[in-house]
Image (tube, rainbow, N blue to C red):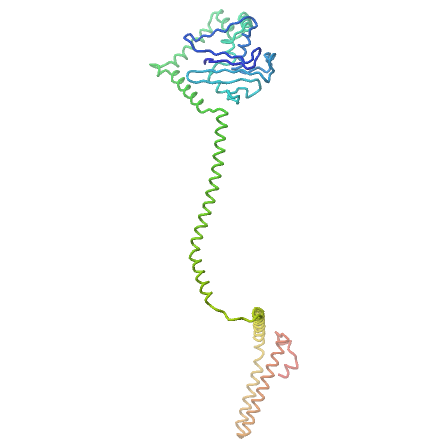
Length: 378
């Protein structure tokens, strides 16, 4: 990773401070200055830019915490990143437009260089050098432990070096540069890293795409509404086309009716029609009632039919006797007897009819309910 430029809008003693590191044959830039010129503050600014401004920073003596801001442009081959860092708990990495930027994009440039490694390898200040020397003398820290082990015979160091050499042999196994395991893996890693950066997008690009999607959805809804209205219009036109023959037929009927002359009707014709219609309706109702009454009486008559058999036998016997008597008499007396018999028969039928009507009035269904006088007389 290479610093192309460094910009410090507000941090420590700096206000709108900027440095451009132009490429040269040696590509080595030396920053120098007098005491209290801000060299250590510049080193802290670079460290805080890459790994975040501490919660208890002492670089707020000129600018408040909320205004602290550091920026830079870095490159790695053909990849370039311009970013800013503000003070806060989260979302402190910003892009050039001061929109929140994913930390992974900066880590892709830093690689395996973490905070501690950067401090010991690239960010040693005078205070850090003194503290490191003290740790070396006391055998503290990773470097002090390694030096102390080497002074005791170096057996742990030799074992570690041997393991590292074996691992290196495995990583670089194979003939040719393309066959080396680590080279292939590193190339694949770089390809995936580039693909990841290509697939990533900025907040501005995301907002632009979101606005485009919203506009497309509004346009889609508008066009969908237009399509629905046009479909309704087409359906209406189709129905109108289907109705044209019917309208033509209706006009022909109207013309035919217009040629027909109707007689003059009296002024009370509508009232008479309504009255006749009402009489007809009443007649239908009365017909239905009489029909129902007839059916009920017929049913009742059928129920009493078995009890009429004795009377029929008596009448038959009487008629047979009268016939025998008439046959033995003279013709004149026979005619008189026949007339008498016919009259008696008519009176009997009339009496039977009256009896039937009275039975229907009484709505009799069993013989025990008949009037005894009428039964004995029968």
